[in-house]
Image (tube, rainbow, N blue to C red; front, side):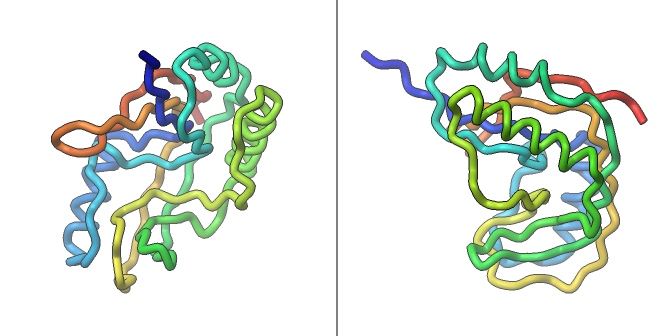
Length: 172
């Protein structure tokens, strides 16, 4: 019997109190899509998809080699992609975030992991299957305090993200 692979991604976690404020604001918008659970709010840095369980140690080693510079990311733009993903995004992306993502992609590629070829568009997904983009003002600051390796797991109550590695970033 084969052990099923893990569905993994590196991300900036959304602190609990910020996630609660974002969800409270989002829920007041009367969206037509399926809201993302508060506990699942995050900003994906690199999506890996299905990864054999035996490669977790390699991914943890990559996490150890990432830049440690912390930063704040102002999420001030609400948008929706054609696939129905409604999201919060920054108008300006700090150089530290670009450096973090580029280093992560380079390390993953060197390690033989599949890396997305699409340009990086930092965002926090608010809802899926949305048909409309609400006209709304947004102003949230995501403090980049750690990079986390998450496993996406299905459960009877829906998808849950479980941290399987975390690397703190320097305080501002």
